[in-house]
Image 1 (tube, rainbow, N blue to C red):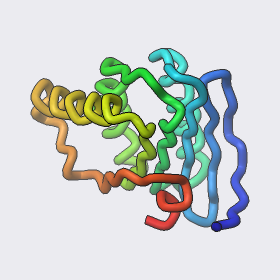
Image 2 (image 1 turned 90 degrees about the horizontal axis):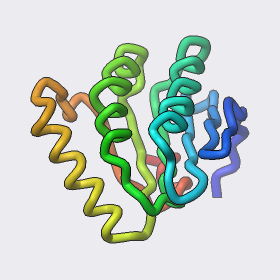
Image 3 (image 1 turned 135 degrees about the vertical axis):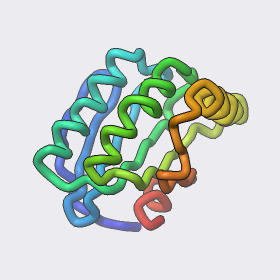
Length: 140
């Protein structure tokens, strides 16, 4: 088991943002079964603000508590937020999905829709991997 000291950046009813300086890594952990778009945008605004003060090159997205996939949130995240953060040096993403085949399938379908509707968005710019748990995400 890895023992790393993280700094709490933000905590809301929907999730928390932590920063690991030694890995220039931000961890976004969702709480609950669903995160509304404004709450999602608020948490990612905390990551953006952090990136103005500290180097952020890797993001771990712990979505393991979610039960509902929200396409508008994912489209905004991919098309608007990710390109901005790429300019700040964030290109490595590790994602922990729930143990739910329907959710995983929804993610794949949603990603295909985003690519189809936004041909200028190039997913190949990013190093994205899916992990089983936080330890695997930190190591990869």
